[in-house]
Image (cartoon, rainbow, N blue to C red):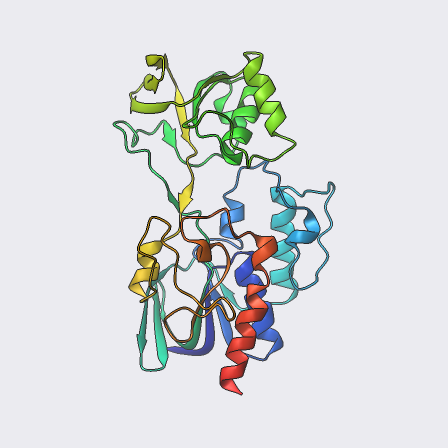
Length: 322
């Protein structure tokens, strides 16, 4: 049994920021991350470019220098990796948390590899692990993916992209430019308003000129080995298809939060209960940090506006132990 002052669940940018603050205050802390350093960012598309500028992604005042004003995935991976290694942060990688239980004033955290005991817990697990399924026959076929990595894979293929957010638009444009025959299936009447402002005109122009086919106010109702069925206001269309990218968003692990005793709002938003001044949840000494604080509104919290959570949380913990 490994006794610690603080365990941080999640080794993304906000989890790293929390660890830096804990180290400054001399706490015996540990980050537990189920994948590599900044696992979610690692699983982003290979050519992904952030909406935020590099200075807004900085943590602990460490300068983030990028080639362009808005950095790309590989630059972010290098930046956060260097922070972890240069500061010799205490982090366990590829170690998944199985359960968190509280008895009296201590938490017992069981992972795939060992058991830890700690006085304080920070949950900074993000939201990228559980995709929003579209719930149609054929969704489990190997040709369907909820994650997009590299456009080269889809060259010369008939590709359907479901969604109209940043990830869907980036995938559609990149794959089209690598030679895929791209069709977008959009639930609403237009491309999403929150799509990156320098990308949105590009996708609209490609659709208007016919380079990318788009069905609006539409939904996929069935997926087969070589076709998809799309319902539109004009009727049903059966399209030849090789691959489907269902980029319809992701959901925080609400079951994990509930298993720890965190209350969720009684509506579709599923906001977790926490003190907005300290980030402490309704479970004493268990804190929430980053995008997970937004429930289903995963667009509310980003690195740039949630990095302050690290300082808020550590001030609260410090006040309890001094």
